[in-house]
Length: 435
Ligand code: GLU
Image (tube, rainbow, N blue to C red; front, side, top):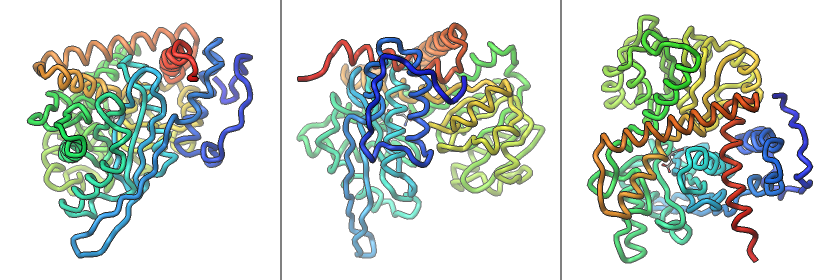
């Protein structure tokens, strides 16, 4: 559909508070456009659509720590709870030097949509600290994490809002968050975060879950297009927890991973890169730079001949500039928000299928949900059970969204938003406004 969305008579005009206005098209502006695109399909529920255009609660905190050299450093931290109509807030915490409030707002909103799209009983939330963790020592990182957790302590909790890993955070960071929250509340509360180490109530399969979900959705989408995974050429942007696992699973299924880009370089090998060896290499060096393969530029990466393209890094990567050159038949969004609305339109015109983030990368939060359920019941499942349930939920969610896309002749992104926003706004309407 065109970017000018048809109007829905159930929507009244509201003026947004200034901090919610998206003048430059950053992630929050992109999200607002996505909401505008779904509004015509929400029927009378569109009366509530404004609720999606503003976060329920946004907390900005100062995170001061003493550095190893004795100086005091201040970092800016955020936790945004976008919507809690369907359950407690849920979403990761990102440590990155470029994190902004508006970015965290968008990421929290995409969590609301994602959690509703796969029907896990959560609202959406997200957190972040504006810091490059690579510049911190291990003990500085621990102090930043613990001080941040203390600052947001009063709005998180197993029944309130449950953080998890995201860009540059991991099981160790989750263990520190869980410990800090537990020390503040006087009892061990494993269910306050997910993505924990297995020894602290973490779930088997959680570490690989997002990449596995990308593979499941990619396989479903490929089947619908009549594309064989065996022999298909795959290009992956990002070689972290999502990109590397997705690359490994496609490689194991017989696909050829021909290009990988990380934060330092991009490598190309038309015969297929040795993904397991590259994972081993990156686990020591922290990058794929120096691994065998032809080095290509960041721009050339988007022009690579492939059938499946997986952006699995940050937002705003596929743009009006590079979308006309993409050769893939489908884009599977491992990252959150990697494609701008303009690029979405170009890809659609060029008949390139986009499996959107809110379904394609929902495997992580789905197994987070399993982890939370296991923590509450103190009864732990086998990895096989977890993976089976994950595959079933992802397949069912993808098939339902595919059907909605066919019925309404819309993109999979708009279809996912139709399914998710309907669920969120139905809950909103049933609960009613308080007071
Ligand atoms: N950070 C992941 C995401 O963006 C996982 C969130 C979670 O498990 O709560 O979906």
